[in-house]
Image (cartoon, rainbow, N blue to C red; front, top):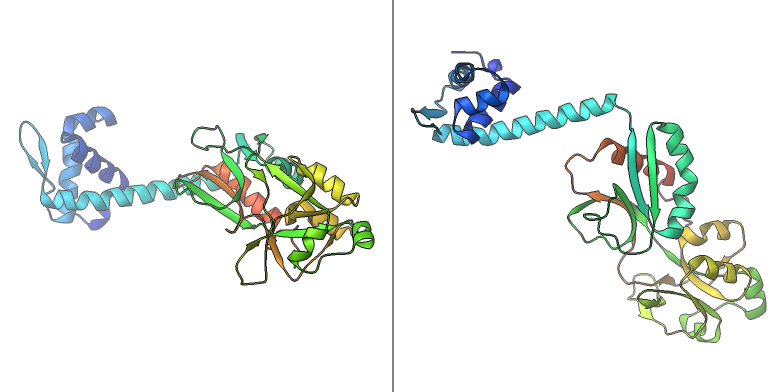
Length: 311
């Protein structure tokens, strides 16, 4: 009887091949070896296991009960070995070639574009294609390797790496607060000048809550609506009115003192579900090296909490 160590990767692959094809000669032709050699490897495997794996007759090679049981282990072992080899090979490889990134327009301008130089310095062989759109993208049909998305993650056919959650804040310029004061409760908002983002699904709803209470929608009469967040931000910086905007869009202006948070006893939002900032990629057990390199780089750059967040 052969020593158990005689089970090698190649023997397992031959066994799986014979199991699936029910033929020594088909596997032999595919592997470029003789049928007798395949037969010999299977016999050695049977000796090692102390079990007959196939019934052999002139027309076919039929798996035994032991063969059917063993094939599950064989498949698992070969998959794990392949995975390990791939991961080990990847360690010695360098990200190279094209990686296609898709991102929302303003988020891409603020928090992806400024960091691409660093990504390129780290991986000089990487070619980057950045497409920015706020439209819904179907990653199965759209030619993208990594999609930066903000929203509620529901699609299980993708893997997602969550960087963190998006939080909304009601803000105004110091000059606006000086002239018009600041609301202290959501009911006060009716008496203030509001600048509201209006996208393809209509104007944003402004929701507020005390911590741990339910969200309440407060209708607002907007002084300005726009489908361009940057224009609304410009108007708010100029003192025209208040905006309810995500932290990644206003964090910088708040740190510089150009905008101040108002009504800080309440949390703000435009949707009741948590909004994640995440990188998603098509479901693959082992994401490609380029995809991993890009996502890991941005995990490092954004930090935890993400660098634009406060409190």
